[in-house]
Length: 112
Image (cartoon, rainbow, N blue to C red; front, top):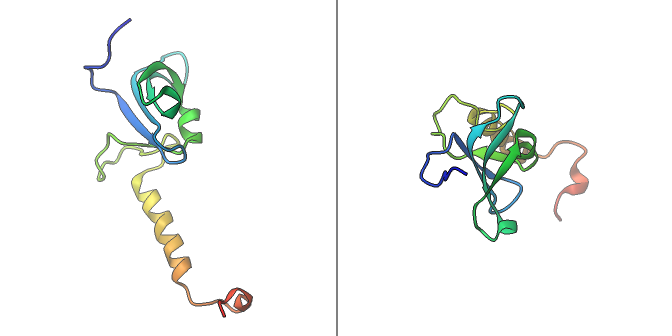
């Protein structure tokens, strides 16, 4: 088996929905779409790297985001093809909604 510890990964991710989960991809399986060979580190692996296969679908379910890209990169940040500008737009929209003045009919939720 090849030792990948000294190699630079093709891509690396951290999970937004699973604390302390990290993935590094060293090879993309040619015949399978969205399947990578690499390693994962998590509380389940006792914070040690374990090698194996993981899929793009697993990354999407974990809310994984790329950690090897610069913030001004044009490459997708998320496995589903999302980019950093998409994420910023979501946060800005949520912030605007929180800062909006009370909408008529929402007075029942107003603090007394």
